[in-house]
Length: 579
Image 1 (cartoon, helix red, strand yellow):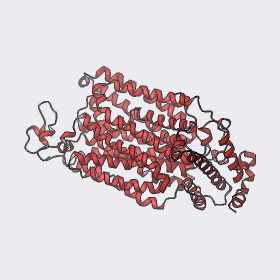
Image 2 (image 1 turned 90 degrees about the vertical axis):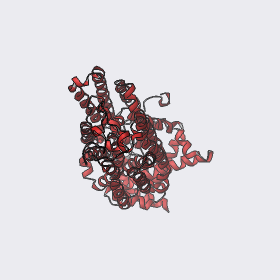
Image 3 (image 1 turned 135 degrees about the vertical axis):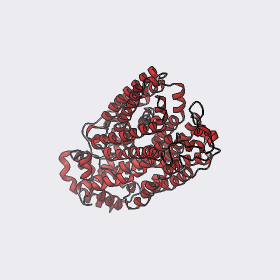
Image 4 (image 1 turned 120 degrees about the vertical axis):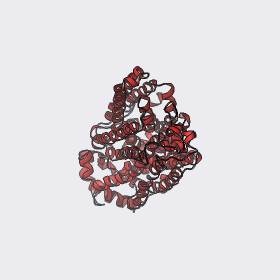
């Protein structure tokens, strides 16, 4: 941890004119209702994250359907199922990394459209799979699209949101993830009954069950299921195309990111986009101030990047590994590592299988308990949407980490005590399920939404797309590890699996407490200062460069509250510069 040196000094009062002015405005749901256009824009963009959540939840329940097992008997082992589930994450890792370049090149908006097309191809392969190879290929290709969504949607939301609502608006993507997961859980549960909840293979005695009560999928593969239908799992895989194409056509009507437009020196379009998003006149002093703060940050990043490129052709990427930027990159990556090792995706991917380890052998019961998990996640993501910008990022993350750690330890204790006698201790099994639900609740309001909010805030404008792509790909790489290993961990470590996750929950809470600064009410441009160090700790050359840019743009007149009446001169300053 030496790379972090010491906790980053936090500024209690925003030094940005826009940040100070907006900090007094309404937060949470009231703030969003007073900014309906930006709220609805962020909400609509979250459709892409709904597909992210849907794809996370849909496969785990399908794996226990007898019709699916009869079609793909070679995919019933714990290791191969781990590879099938985690193939999505492997594709998503690449998609998130690749989209860092694409989102800068063609815009955040158009990169979402590319993601929809790739996702459609992957979904088609999965829904129409006739053999395991098609299924694996569909998981990887679809994963590329999902990874692109996971990188660009919270980035787009963060860049169009006003600072006082940024946490709540970016949290909408996590709310959409939980809605997508819940829909997939309950759709799988309902489709499980199409034609009957059992395969009923034609011509096999005892409806295909062996004397020990297990289903003989190898024998069933050679026959036709007279009960549960193929549509039981093909339709849930295909239905995710509906929100994908709603997003595709709707994105044509949404604005470009003002920060991306400024990166492309499309100043007039930047002002027009800001005006639309903030519902303010292009001549409004506050809007002109925000425009100039964005411009100052872009000019600073361009001049700094040009200096790096003059030294090395890979200077733009090399800049991410300079001392100042590397600190931010490490914070982002470690947040995502801790998020994945809370164990949440072990639950989302394998909830039915986990509930089976508590002594519940009925597929219907397991799918029902899984669906309840999804409902809890939706309900308890709402506190982050409503209150994140009021109470701050750190308080949510630390509280959630403590809650998840306690839940894991209790499940480990119950599982370790009754793992060999669940049949005679059914109430203990339900207690374990209850604490799995409570674990999901603690994740839903904390590490689910807040990790994505925080990692959008730590990079400067020119580095944000590249930095977020690395952070998002880190999330997917460790997501891949969880998807691949969870089944085998449960089989070999048993209750030790929950102790393992509890240790990471505790570690994540300590990491946030000691090393992560609070970002509430800070503008994205201002966070260049707060995540690098305090104003006196930035390299002299960088400080002088930013001061010179601010003087050129007239921003020095807006550095203190008593100077706010001079903001009216911004238009004159900008006009004089353009001439």
